[in-house]
Length: 230
Image 1 (cartoon, one colour):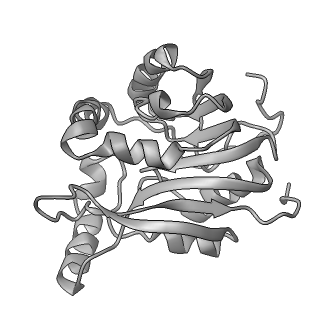
Image 2 (cartoon, one colour):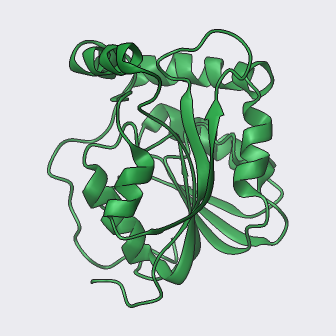
């Protein structure tokens, strides 16, 4: 890949491998495009993007068909092998050039300041080290570059928050590819030094039961217009 870094950024823990989760996630996510309205969310998430884009945690590549023609290139990082194979197939059908590569959010295999935008779509819930991952996002964005995010996290009243935390401490991450329900993605972006722009709260499903996974944030943030730390 042309943008591979020559540095030796290593992740301390082993590679991501969740074959059972990958299998059922791939099935459920395709149905959610229409049943939960995820297709429309992806359209809003990616509308107006241009230039070179890095997508972190591409999953099975459902975002690829929603990138506008103004995007010159998408480099899609996906650490889970089974999902990466599905993303490679989706890349072949995309209307914009998509390069799918392995890698971890905490050690992105790309050069600094190489991208105009970074897309985070239902990924911060499952990264092993959120501050480190967002530090990498800052590193690879050009000064003034934008982050498009659609993430689920903490929400609801006290009872729901307690439920989310209890699930996070027990079997939920084990059964769902490392996913955590009670993280606060917008606060994490702010703490990492990003400037938070327009955002909105989204419930999924919009109509129907409210679940621990329902509380989502859709919005944009910017990297300050200053050099990133190398």
